[in-house]
Length: 93
Image 1: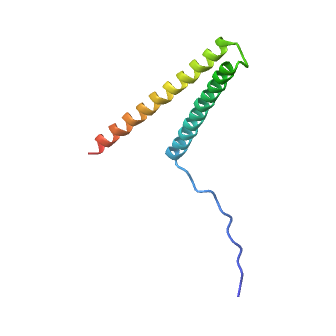
Image 2: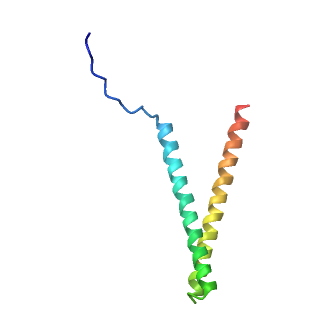
Image 3: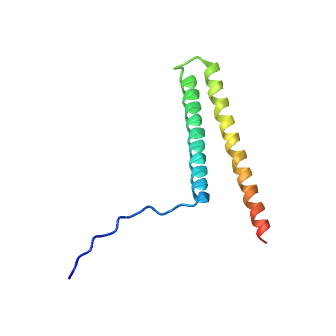
């Protein structure tokens, strides 16, 4: 009985479409994490202002505005993705 070696495993080949989708998913995930971090910072700044740990109202307002804009951007991206998906569904019929 002869024992043969096992062929080395090669990673599966990915198509350019899969690579693009993966890159898009990563970019989307980074954007959501960034928006979440901005929201956390704004919450912490507002809590610090309410507790009296800071009196820098300007910095708190800037942090809250940044968080609000990031959330609005995330909502608009979501809306565009849904519209694109619905358009694709309509085209297939």
